[in-house]
Length: 157
Length: 157
DNA sequence: TCATAATAGTTTGATCACTAATTATTAGCA
DNA sequence: TGCTAATAATTAGTGATCAAACTATTATGA
Image (cartoon, rainbow over all chains, first blue to last red; front, side):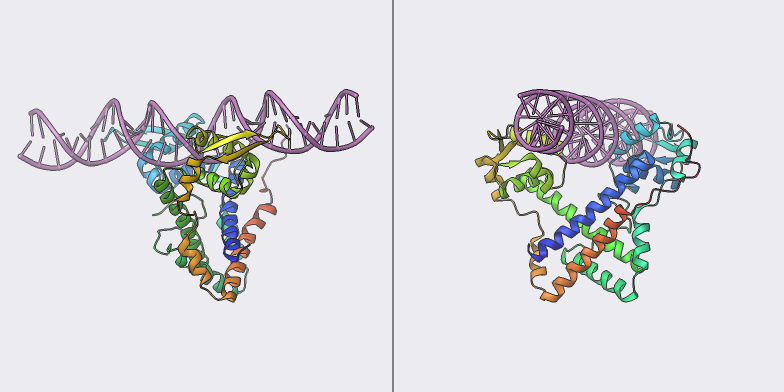
């Protein structure tokens, strides 16, 4: 196998690892990862509008609507139409919703960071330099990205 | 910004770049990216089994089945049950299928590969080693994923 | 040989994600 | 004021994805 192929393979493995972890997370909480993301987003900003949530986690309003449907059915969130602007709908966590996210496990990057920080200083620098170089080589350095490990878009401030 | 944050950002950038590229590809070919992946996989290995394709592009057999359903409906592939082992189903490209992928760019970043190949041998090796290490640091997570210590989990069922 | 296990593929039911169309409401402006 | 544009959320339709259940076939071992 050519070297660049191996490189692409390990890249895919990384992507897959991130993906698998989020699935594992889902099993533990009984929520799918988009559901968890929505809950966390609402926890940060109570009484959030559908559109705000959509923007925060970079999904369409339609998708948020359907996820909120399910969360509402499970009694984790409530909807309340705004009185000042009747087009808007505020979403809030129920007590049960708050309870669930309270003991949801850490996201992958926390574990990864721990390992990274355990490395030698020079190793860290080298790893960073390499990763940045790959990013540059893919013309990706100008892309907006947050330090959150999720596959598929999320959170671009 | 902390070093690990920079690392995560560049990792996300790379993931995003790959993602954006595959979306761009989809627009050009009129196929969704999984559909294109399936076609390319079959092009590499004609008369491929569902399971082989599934393994190659890392999806479940069920998913491949449904994608092949659509490709077949569009006349891009054909199915043929094996005579030696009637459980197996071989998938092949039709002429139209071959036509479509012939003028679709490879789902790899041509730029990236060119740049990678232009690097010194030792640089390539180092880049690969680093990427593999990151991969390991994440895979390992999957293995030693200690079940979260739950308080009061002893409850009798 | 024949019962049982393993394998290949499909079906089913759920979730997720998108775009486009629809509904209801508010804002802008002549 | 009243018409039109913009906005917020939802619905509809398509496709992707998986786990689990199911069907058909082949392999295995007593």
